[in-house]
Length: 116
Length: 111
Image (cartoon, rainbow over all chains, first blue to last red; front, side):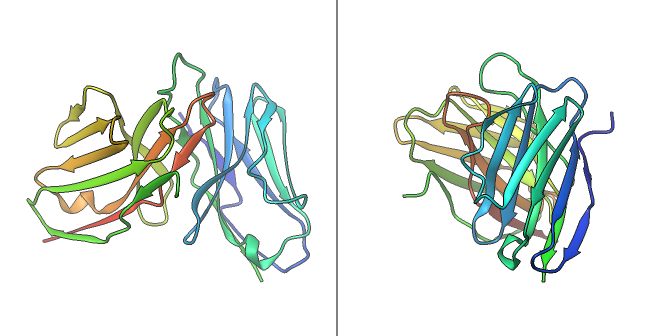
């Protein structure tokens, strides 16, 4: 099992540029999550999907951020235009829709974004 | 008040020591509880779920106190490989997506 796959692993860009992060969840998982992690704020949920449908995007910082999930095996998180304060590690995670609330989330290796 | 609070540490302990972490949560309607482990520059991984009756997995014991709204993790006979950041995680209910992560407690086990 390949696990959650994210690309790129590292991204360095200049302020104002568009950044696109990609994620392939584990096959068969119904939920996909995008998180951002910084030293100051810890791990924060940005948006999550259930069966490719966005359920809660209240964590998306502002209109510069957008996410899509065109099919069950692919999702993107786009930042346009990027700003230095967007520098963080962005994680994608997926989980299976089991019974109750004890379903494990499996995280990808993350994309380390630096905006200069 | 933050939703999930943890002592950031670091906890520096010698090999073989017993160490305990606590975590408090603010939402009394929270449904489920977890400890995740995150190694330096790696992704978080589930260490164990925390059930109302408490549960044990080898050297790790997790406890939940709903009345006081805190969760604990006990590590016995610490190993060098236990060095990591331990994240307290709470599902505040409603759906799977409502996971709130603490900022983590850093553990460093020394020889």
